[in-house]
Length: 198
Image 1 (tube, rainbow, N blue to C red):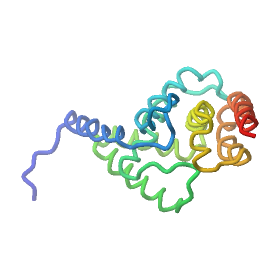
Image 2: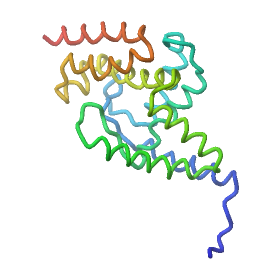
Image 3: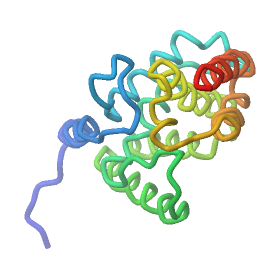
Image 4: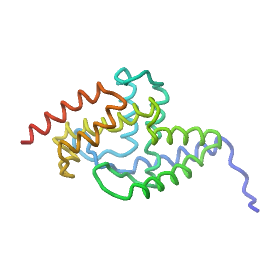
C-alpha cells in the first residue's frame, strides 16, 4: 500500500496544465503563413478557437460557441502521446484511433475525476462529429490548414503531391457538414490556387 498522500483537486489540475505544455513541442506539417517555420499543435488549437469565435455566424445551424471552442482547445491534446497524423499521410487508422483513446484516458485522467470525464466526453464528441457543435468544430479543423496551404503557395499539398480532387474530398466533405458557406468560399480559393499552378 502506498504511503503517498492523494493529490489535492488543485494539484491534479496543475499537473494537467503542466502536462499539456508538451503540446507546444508537437510540430505539425503546416507552415505558418509567413513560412518562417512549421506551426505546433498548441498554436493550431489556439488559432482554431479564434476561427470559431470569429466565424461562428457561418455555421450551418446555431451552435454553442463555448462548447465548440472547448472542443477545439482540447481536440489535439492526445497528440502529446499519439503524435500528429496529417490527413495526406496513409497509415493504420484503427491503431491511431486506439493510441489517441489511450492518450485521452491518460491525459484527461490527470484531472479530478468529474472534470477529466467532462473534458474527455467533449473530446469524444469532437471525434464522433455527430452533433452540430462537433461538426462545426471539425469543419474549422479542416478549414484552417486549407487557408494556410492557399496562403503558402500550396504548403503541404505541394509536399504531399495532393491533387485538387483530393483536396475537394478530404477537406470539402468535412467542412460542408459544419458550414456550407465556408466551404463555398474555400472551394473558390482551392480552384484559384490550382489554376495558378498550371
